[in-house]
Length: 401
Image 1 (spheres, rainbow, N blue to C red):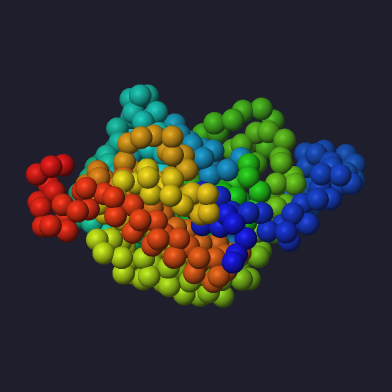
Image 2 (image 1 turned 45 degrees about the horizontal axis):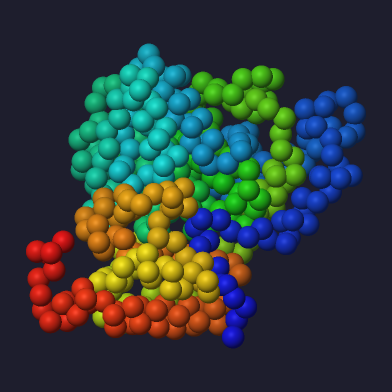
């Protein structure tokens, strides 16, 4: 019996790797200098540590160190990218394009842009959650300044056609930004190969600390410029003022280094465990997979357990299993997942859908326990479900819902 509860919500956050914590610890105590203090060794040592981390993050995504801007996380990076482009390129246009399934940190920022007089087009996705490329290209117009498409979706794990989106953006001389928080460290991401102009990432999605992230800003072909959203001191090449979080940045750098070294083996191991979990749960009657089966992150699966109330299902196993019924940032909402609705999934089915996100420290024993716990809970709830009984009798439930 594995130790309970079992954590299978690694898309919400990941535990800090002990090796990351070990790298960070000196920068809380003995090496505590301000990286902007240029007149003594305490500041020099802190600045050196930041430089190493910048190189580690850049190496993970195929960038140059000077193209990495440290932030408090992907949410701030998303805001800096979108608002920074909107203000800097106002002379060229005020139109942006994104998808209906972006993280709220992107969608809410786009809503803010609209309040400022900007125009945003929201592109649909297909039934597997991949962006409609024809609709995307058709939406481009002379005043389009940015296309924002996430690298991989946080709820379904579906990986987008990033290179194809980039090719479209390049043809029309439009900047391309991707929220890659869920993809970085899980699958190979290379800003040169993928043709990315702006990219956001967050340490706590890749076994680093919370409260630190980065924005990649392309320096050439094309050179991207942004209007800063945080003023005061001109840190980070003027893009993001504020005293640098040296321990957090060191942690992000170490996390990036570990991912670069271990990602392939980890993806292979987690892919096998994910497949075992996914196929076992899909053997349950009236269950469906949400998202793409092939173009998907190796550690994620999202499954609907139809004809059972999602709230009761969650209550049935949440003491033993930590899983999610949507994004952590929208978990307080009673509404069904807007991501699943964008895939054309009915409300009732969306309400009974759960995301299972395995991680670096997930074991096969834990996966085996999760399979049995979920199966047991679903079957127990269906025994007393009138909707389930009607389904088994062949009643057309669409007339009821």
